[in-house]
Image (cartoon, rainbow over all chains, first blue to last red; front, side, top):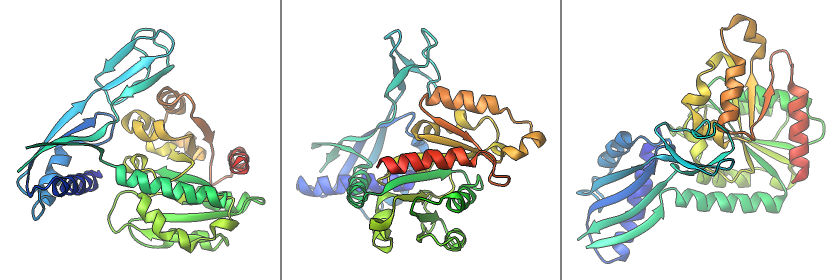
Length: 114
Length: 215
């Protein structure tokens, strides 16, 4: 639901970096979004395209790498990846003493500028 | 030309949240980010909490898309309150909080409750500088909510199950709500209450008092 403000944040961060590096235009940007982050990639792409007009990113393509939710079990010490946006129990020992090691990411990785 | 960026997208928000937190700590005020879907009973819970409380100095920030009804309800009970209208935004962010902090007597408060915009999704993602997040779920919303909206259940320190007086009239499985919520977050503290009848409220206010006194 808040993909628009996420898109605004992305454009602010990359525009600042682009200027700092001495370039005028952003051609593409790579970001990483965890599946448990609450961000819908399609909605983010839509929001990014809607607000990039009139910015240094006006011609930029947004590439989203989705990161699956990964957990590490404290009981049986196995690590696992799930399809869902959440983990309810360790798929190996069925215990619920685990911590989430990946899946909440919302990071900008790099970009192509010219 | 490839340029490395390596930046968290919400970095700016997190920086301001840290600054808010520094100001809260300096003033010695404990801060709760209160979240729920629309109509779960956040403002009713605050009204009851303010009425039952005899010890803590409690201030409130009300976040809504529009209107000041909630702030007026709190003001009637004599608590310092500020209303934020987000003008369409689905959540409060750290900067909105920062901008109203000078309108509250932080030094005089023991506890500040920030009532977020009614929304079971986005508020969980944005830190505002709080010590803990607390969420309200009214049982009328259904027992499927923890697994449909896992983030908020995972991020919260306490879950208030409100409107339990409606249980006889609903086909809701309270056991499933609690079981799924605890599976998502084994440390979650759960309170079953009714703001209408007052049932369960003393346990909640006592917990709140202990939390705020520790700070």
